[in-house]
Image 1 (cartoon, rainbow, N blue to C red):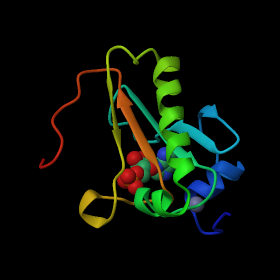
Image 2 (cartoon, rainbow, N blue to C red; image 1 turned 90 degrees about the vertical axis):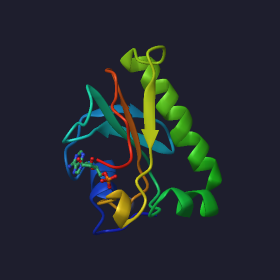
Image 3 (cartoon, rainbow, N blue to C red; image 1 turned 30 degrees about the vertical axis):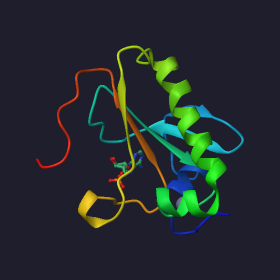
Image 4 (cartoon, rainbow, N blue to C red; image 1 turned 180 degrees about the horizontal axis):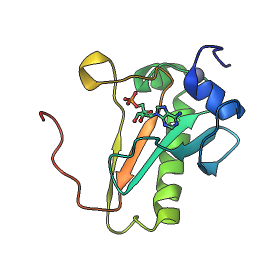
Length: 117
Ligand code: AMP
Ligand code: ZN
């Protein structure tokens, strides 16, 4: 299931270039274009769902898949021990700009507090 006007569906399809760091049958992960930390990777299900709750309601196994992929990528990037943050921005107040479920993996340095700027 893909959506023709979705940026991340196009990235998964290879129609828009990305720096791929990890792939499985169900997941795809690439470096964020505007990194917010030394390591900033986006992990997405290949299938199109709008956000984390949509994914959990309709394809909960994929939520496991992207979380497990995040753990593997953290190992690959050498930050499994130092720690990392996993974030799902959901909706306008959180600043979600792409409505294809994506898990941000942030790390590689001491991260600041989150919440209010
Ligand atoms: P969000 O704000 O949670 O919806 O996250 C969307 C993320 O996608 C942002 O961190 C953007 O920097 C990132 N992004 C936008 N376009 C691209 C792209 N072409 N390749 C990689 N990351 C992108
Ligand atoms: Zn999509």
